[in-house]
Length: 421
Image 1 (cartoon, rainbow, N blue to C red):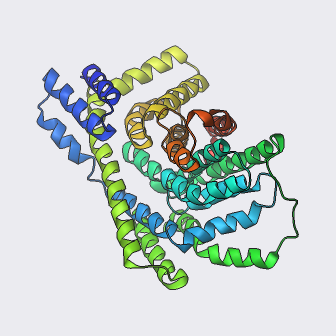
Image 2 (cartoon, rainbow, N blue to C red):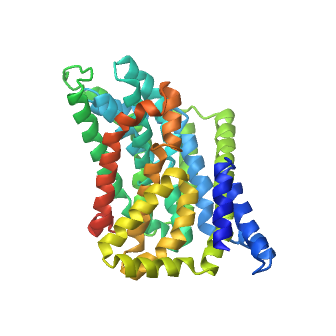
Image 3 (spheres, helix red, strand yellow):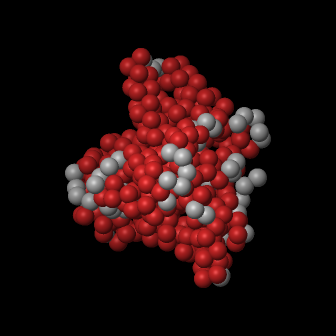
């Protein structure tokens, strides 16, 4: 069944059929064509995967992010980031990195972050004399930090297929996310010096303006702190935290920034419904496909092959990284995690790789695919805003890709970087 399913799925992707539909059609076709199990199994598996309480967190985290990023809250976050680093070499680029890091504690969506940051920062950087391809490359790569810092939608999806605690994943992702941010900050500074980007000599720091910026951005900055504290001390579950985050966004927008109106709420709910629908379709489609691979014993066969062929644990981890990087380049992040999770979890257990560490490795691998051709969702968004082609950004993407791979290798081989409590 797996062979038939793989062939049909590949053909549908070549024909540009949406991934969610390709997953459902290919798995159903494999079950019907082989006749090894009743066709009703496909229908049962479609809905079985969605009956999970933690999945409720997905729409609420998306809604909280939409409410917070579309109003003055998002503007104050970007202004705060700019005041913090814009006066240094490569500072306008670093402001995008700082903004993405802070947005990571709000939205959990790299595409939303790329759109929100790019619409403001790219025109600003272009007016300051930054090359358009570099602006697009930076804005497409920096938002992957969002996926490492809680809340993170991909981590919730990984928890679904691995039975790992969402809270443990959220807490373990903080340090790798900050490492990624530091690496990107260094890239911005080095590239700005090497290529002599426009630079205004540092002025005397206006502490009063910076303090006002911090106070205005404080409600947003407190969101990730709230999430970490509630999860660390078991005050609330991730699902409960997501609902509280929505209430928090409504209160802050309505009472502090006072820019909340029915239109914003309507647009936020509508966009949340669309994004959630796409994610749920992929979750439904991946369920029968995962069941078919399990039925054919693919995970066990793959684990045994890897253990006997590669033997060394570090070689197996390297091979897993290469496979995830390649798959992540062609598949969007949710289906990549949902399909690779059932295969790599048994292998990780065989070689003694912590499943939380595997989750962070998988999320970062697939996140890198968001800004690399040919799919590159955040790359497409950023290039559209900057008015450049994907091909013209390849040279500027290279330093960010190298930085991402170095962080990936670090979290792959240094377990202490992914400690969870």
